[in-house]
Amino acid sequence: GYGISAQALTAVIRAHDGRGPSTMLTSSILQALGLSSAEELIGWTYADPSWARIAALVPVVVSCAEAGDDVANKILLESAQELASSVKAVVGRLGLCGQDGKDAFPLVLVGGVLEANTRWNLLLEQHG
Image (cartoon, rainbow, N blue to C red; front, side, top):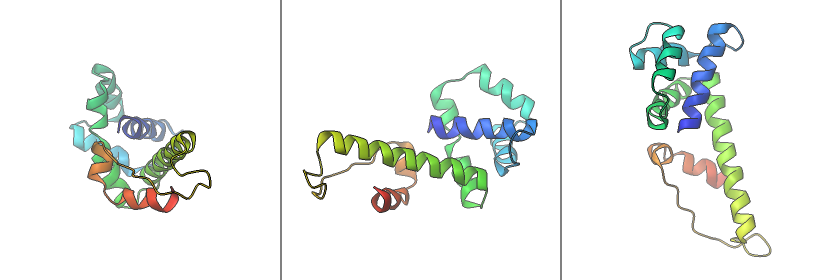
């Protein structure tokens, strides 16, 4: 969750600076935090950079992605791909799929981000 939210905050600042594409994340995150500008967002982030506080922005990223924002969709897609790659690496290292790589094994998805977005389970099954 923290990684997703941190990328979203970075995307907002990049868009503000003109170094990245405009994104719905800007207005959505500012509204969620009760802020009026990207400059205030910088202060908000540095005032208390705790993991949980930043990770709490994940629902905003998901909402923007569901509304069709390309930047938010890219953040979520890359995060899901990275998670799938991590699962594949662990499965391979532990030999959970057997020697031919076709054995079934249980996979438990836990954590606030995965539990709140159950359709991501399908993403892992399709690409995993």
